[in-house]
Length: 271
Ligand code: KMH
Ligand code: ZN
Image (cartoon, rainbow, N blue to C red):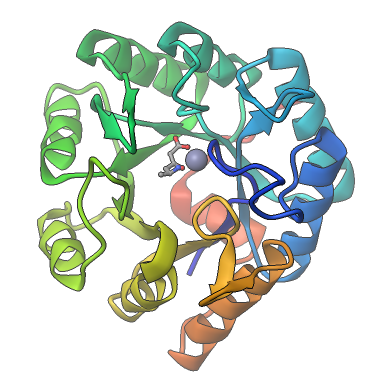
């Protein structure tokens, strides 16, 4: 079971949870703590000095370096970045050659905003990721997004075992129900690797259901700011520890970085 920590995300601010890491050092420290708690992958969004989501390559490079100084966790850069950042800037992040990066296959409403992922840009980014040896994690917010990814595979743009996140609970995407999750899992290719990203209130329940169904898990303040009703999480580590605990209780073994690297077929990049 591959455990990913998502410490920051594009939406929350320190005013929402003062433990949200936003500076490069804060993000790297949060990732190192999560690594010690069992995370093998770090899903990274970076922020500018005013906490705004940014695709600034200098800031992203600094965060990657600070993480690498602290621990050998696999780095997955978000190319979703934030709704206010244009696609072309977001796509540049893969030039930093993280082991993995997200690929958001379709445009959609996202809360009260708009998440623009035009088909031609998505395809160009997918091809670039394959060329650079950056493993795409395909973000599925609705049923048609899976079909869009399968079309890219059928046309030879994406190859090998595909890695999916099934995202539940974004306003504009699927709601966070077990039925929606199971319907998607049933349609994944047999060799797919997948995890649940459950946003907000249903985070605990749907993460647990995903683990029980054999999926991987993601945990952290990007997906929920709370440990329980009205209880702010004092960082991502307690959420990572909770997911690890559920997995172990279900008899799942937590993947090390090396076993995650092997099972995802990741390319090792010289830095
Ligand atoms: N923020 C989540 C709803 C990405 O960063 O590219 C989905 C996500 C995708 O993590
Ligand atoms: Zn993200």
